[in-house]
Amino acid sequence: MAGPFYLGLDIGTQSTKGVVIDPASRGIVARASVSHGLIEGLAPGAAEQHPHTWWESVCEVVGHLHSQGTFDPKALAGIGVSGQQHGFVALDANDRVLRPAKLWCDTTCAEEAEELSRELGRTIPAGFTAPKILWMKRHEPELFARLHTVLLPHDYINFRLTGTKTMEAGDASGTGLFDVVERRFDAPSMATIEAGLSDRFPRLGEVGEPAGALQPCAAEELALQSGIRVAPGGGDNMMSAIGSGATRRGIGVLSLGTSATIFAYSDRPIVDPDGAIAAFCDSTGAWLPLLCVMNATGVIEEVASAYRGQHDLNSLTRAARDVPLGCDGILLLPFLQGERVPNLPHARGVLLNISPGTLSPGHLFRAALEGTALNLAWGFERLRKLGIELEDLRVVGGGSKNELWLAILCDAIGVPVQRLAEPESAALGGALQARWVCERGAGACASIDEIANDFVSLAGTPIRPVAARRRAYGELLERFRVETRRNFASAV
Image (cartoon, rainbow, N blue to C red):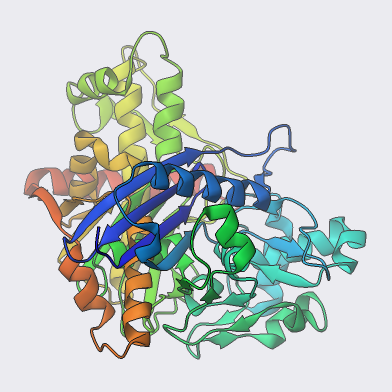
């Protein structure tokens, strides 16, 4: 128990996770998770959580980590926080939360997103932070008048930890109000929403600069020592990149959660004029071009829920294995809750070409696996056209457990897929960033890539594309594109 130890926290949509790492043993010595959900009973398209829920979950997770007795809390040297991107946390002048946070998957701001896209001359997805701010101004003017500070989810947890309000370039680049090339806030874009809005954003920290130190009141709640260095943290994708070793060219990450993302390190800014690929910064001083689709494991779970009590995910996967590639002609356009890529915020799913025998559990489950994979493959083609070439995709998230889905994704995308030994890459990335920041502060010169790749390890053998299946999915992808355009002609 000598230490030093580093704590990584990941505040997600469905849960808060925590890991404690020991660099001496290159291992995780404690881990914990606490579930939480969305606020129920909201209007269609709304997705909200209260920031207090995240802090309560953090306290509970840290309590569980303590109870394991596998590390000395007095030897904890740093904390790094990962958070779901794009959420809008609104504080008043007394630093009180004005309303629940609208999340990345909230589509009630689609009209505001379309308006901002027209005015700014670039695509602003409905899930980004900027449309949420404009929505609040339009729909909740009394609350907007009291808006003093705009924070993102991980910024709010950093604020609770340190008492200091800051942002960093990685997560800030997902607001829609950030100059990704210059790595700074875009004041003219902010003024499009409200004159002086830039004054309501906190200071942007430098790369590797701590967000602050653990303040006494937070230390008391967490049963930790005050003064522990808190790293800048970042969005969950930025932290997952660190925790997956995607800190150099050629390594990509495929994250299969409620949404699905594919992202990769870039030493130069990648700006997509069509707006399909998010032009993010990473949290290490480089860039992180990212594809995000909103429909992934949620589609799989929705199909599985139709057979609850008859089949579980394992039996459905076995049944889907017996269905030939292409599902005997049926095709699912998997846009159950709208979609970001392609930009279809109001879309709903479509099941095509039903014929006798194709409504079996195996057919429908394979159609869900293939439909989500084809949508990701469509977006990945855009990444390739922008110059991102990958040696392999390191897959993380809950969906990584389904080997059939991984094989389908591998064949559809055309890149080897590799699991990681540690699937909680965002929490691990937070811990690794905390180590990097603390060691930099002590004068060490190791790069974040050296630290990440000293710790990140792969699991099993890679899944490689099979030429015949790759060709078949290429043909199926063309059909997927045609049917999407036909069914959503006014929007695609």
